[in-house]
Structures are given as C-alpha cells and as structure tokens.
Image (tube, rainbow over all chains, first blue to last red):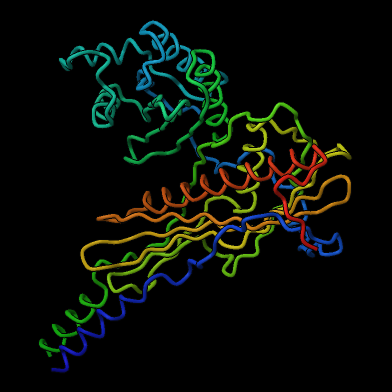
Length: 197
Length: 204
C-alpha cells in the first residue's frame, strides 16, 4: 500500500507542467512613451550590440576537409553550374589556410571504387562519413540548397569525423537565381571564416 | 543487508529513471527571415539589448522522467550579443540602413523579458515549449518614442529529446519573433515617415 502511494506520488510529481514559460502574447499596437521613461541599464548593457551575429570560435583552421557536392533540391542550377559552384566553394574555403581541402578527384575515385551508383549520390551523412574516413579527412563539409516558398535556403554543415558530431552550421536565405545562390555561398564561407579560431 | 542495497538501488533507479543530469551549452543558428521590402533605407541604430529575464543564468532546463528539473541549458555566446547581432542582420536584410553616427537615425532598444525552452514530460512522449519575449522601444529623431512587446511561442512533441530538439525550438521561436517584430518596426518607421499615424494608436 505504501509502495503504491509512493508510486502515485512520483507520477504526480511529473504532472507539474511547464513552469518557466509565461502566458504572454504580443501587444497589438505600439504605445507612445514619454522620453523620461527611459529605463536605467547597467553599464555593460548600455553599449550597442555587435553588428554581426557573434559566433563561438571553434578550432577548425587548417583542418583537412572533404568538400562534397552541393545538393540542390531547388533544381535552380544546371548540372554544370552546380559543379562550378562546388569547385568555387572548395577553392574559397581553402583560401588563407582556412581549411586544407582534399581534392574532389580523390573523393570521386573513392566513390567509384566503392561502386556507389554515381558520384552524385553521396548526399546522405552516412555515405559522406564513410568516404571522409576512407580518404583520411578530419571533417566533411556538406552544403544543401532547399526551396522554401519563393526563397532558397542554403545550409552548410561541418561534420567532425573524430568526434562524430557537427562542429558548426551556417544558414542563409535569399532568392533562388544563380547569382543570388553564389552570394549565399559566399555568405556561408564568410560565416565559417568568422567562426574559425 | 543485501536487501537494503537492492531496495536503495531500485529506489534510486526509480526516481532517476531517464534523468538528463548533464548541462548543455547550445549553439543557436539563425535562419534570416527578412527580405528587402522597403525602398527607402531609413537610418536605424540598435543602441542596446538589455537582459531583463527573471533567470539570467540559463536559457532552458532539462527534466527527468517525473518532470523535475535535472540540468540546465546555456548559450555558447552572450545572449544579448547574439540577439543584437541577429536583429542587426535582419535590419540590414530588410533594407534598413544601420547608421550609428546619423543624427536622423531611429534609435532602437530591446529589453529581453523571456528567452527559455522547457520540456513537459508525459507518459510515453515529451513536449517542448519555447518562448522569446521582448520589448522594443523605438526613439524617432523627431522626439517621439514608441514601445511594444512581442512574444513568440513554439512547441513540439518529441519521442526522444536531444540537445538538437531544444536548439530547434529556440531557433524557431527566434525566427517567429524576428518575423513579427522587424516587420512591425518597418511599418512604424514607414507610417511615421509618411507623417501619418496610419493604424497606430498613440497612448500617453
């Protein structure tokens, strides 16, 4: 009987629901406030916030990275454009020693050796991890273009093969044209550059 | 004696079943929501983001199988810096001109009131809730000041909660908050620039 009571009490403990999420809603309109109503703020909060989104600095500079083909779910780019864009990405991330990029030819050889259906099919993470390990890369870089409404979202993930976890991700959003996607890829590279220690 | 150990072990196992004891530090990525929507590049300047949350040390908590808090969630960078950086990025993308030295710039201040993610544990499933709640103050160069609170909630069920689940919920809440707040700031600037209060009720 005592055990039953204890069990019931334990379960009831889990029925506390949420405690820190307040029932707040957006105000429907702006209210005019008097200038004198400016709130006092501590000194450390009185300074303006950074212009750019701050990143946690990570130890990725100089890592050996396998750059895989960009996956274009939007179908906005031709095969040739996609290939050129991947080449551009691989070249740009190697600039100023950000990453050591393993030649794409090396990845291609491994994929053909592994009798994958085609070089283009290595989009899923398990395939990229397998190939990355075979070519002794430290990290893999995969980039994905996905259409959302009239926009295209470009996401990039830098995966650490040793830690078996994603080191860093970067996302941008813009139009789906070739030039706009090129600009988004450059933005992604700039984000990784800012993250690198 | 052995029975005592067994009973103690069973009790511990019962009470701490599935307990996430380890604190986590989350890295939030923000997917921009704004696209250039205005033709006039109004000068704006985000002067400060202040942290007025009731609990400033953490951005969320983990709970055990019985709904009691068992670990904390932290952000890898200073929350006010991250929030300000994201807001500046959205301002830039929407076509506003970030002009710190322009005396004609509308000065924008943010007071962060809530930024939290929390699970609700039920039998067989877990539900995550996140909130981003902040007050925006816009000081226009002509001397008028407006304020408005914006809140964005997200919630989702998960079979198993990972750090990625907390991250996703907070990122989605942040996107929703930005989508509402930045659009309303733009509307306010446009309506004020037109010299009309179109749709804005002024309270004193």
